[in-house]
Amino acid sequence: MIALDGYVALVTGANRGIGAEIAHTLGSLGATVALNVRSDASGARSVIERLSAEGHANAHDVFEADVADPAAVDRMVAAIVERYGRLDVVVNNAGITRDGLAVRMSDEDWDAVISTNLSGAFYVSRAAAKAMMKQRSGSIVMISSVIGLVGNAGQANYAAAKAGMLGLTRSLARELAPRNVRVNAVAPGFITTDMTASLPDAVKEAALASIALKRFGEPVDIANAVAFLASDAARYITGQVIAVDGGMTFV
Ligand code: NDP
Image 1 (cartoon, helix red, strand yellow):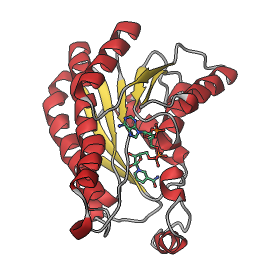
Image 2 (image 1 turned 90 degrees about the horizontal axis):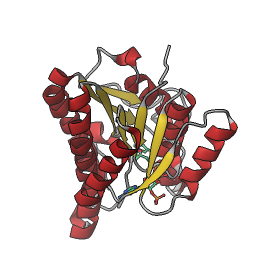
Image 3 (image 1 turned 180 degrees about the horizontal axis):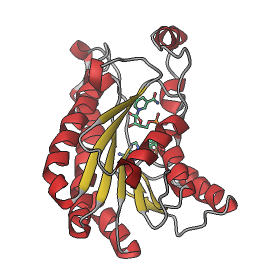
Image 4 (image 1 turned 30 degrees about the vertical axis):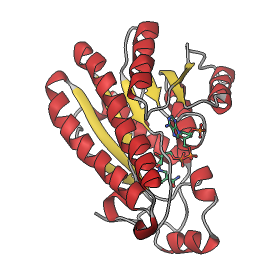
C-alpha cells in the first residue's frame, strides 16, 4: 500500500511529460509537491489545479530554477525547506536531448545534455541530501533511461549522462544510507511524451518491435514506479535501478 501523506516531494522538470505526471501521482497519494520548472510554469500550474479539483489541495507550489545552474538549485532547495520545513522526496526528472552522431556532435550539444541531465541531478541531490541527512530520512529517485543501460547510436551525450546518473545513484546510496536516505533510479523505455513525439516513424516502429509487451509506455507507468520508490513500501531498497520499459531490455 503506497501512501505519501505528510511527505514533501520535489519533482524537477514538472511542467510537462513524465515530470508533470509524477507530480500529479505523488500529489494524489497525499504528498505536498514542489513542482520545479525552468521558466514556463503553465503546465505545472495545471497539475496543481487538477490536484485541487480532485480533492488533493495541499500547499503544492511552483519553484523556478534551471537545474543546470548550481546557485539557482541551492536557492530553490533552500526556499522549499524554508516553506515546508522538510524535504522527503526528490525526483530528478528534468532532461533534454540533443541527438547527433558522435563524430559530428558539437561541444555545445555534448555540454548541454551533460549539464542538464547529469550535473543537474547532482546539484539537486547534493542540496537535498543536506536537508535529508539532518532529518535522517529521505528518498531520491533518478529518472535515467534504458539508453543509459544499453547505449544508442546518435545519443552518445544522452547515454553518457543517463549512465552517469546510475553511478551517481549507487555512490549516493552508499554515502547516504547511514542517515537513512535511499537513492534509486528508474530507467524508462519508450514513453509517449513531447520528447518522443518528434522521432521519425521508422525509429518508432523499430522501438516498438523491440518491446516485449508491444506497446509504448505512458508517463503514469513511470510515475507509479517513482511513487513506490519514494514511499515507505520501498524502505529496504537503495542503490537499485528499475527498468520500466515493457520488456525492452533484460539486464
Ligand atoms: P519532455 O521533453 O516532455 O519534458 C522535459 C521537462 O524537463 C520539461 O518540463 C522541461 O521544461 C524540463 N527541463 C528541461 N531542462 C530543464 C532544466 N535545465 N531545468 C529545469 N527543467 C528542465 O521529456 P519527458 O517527459 O519525455 O522526459 C522526462 C525525463 O524522462 C527526462 O529526464 C528524460 O530523459 C527521461 N526519459 C524519457 C523517456 C521517454 O521515452 N519520453 C525515456 C527515458 C527517459 P520546459 O517545459 O520548460 O521545456
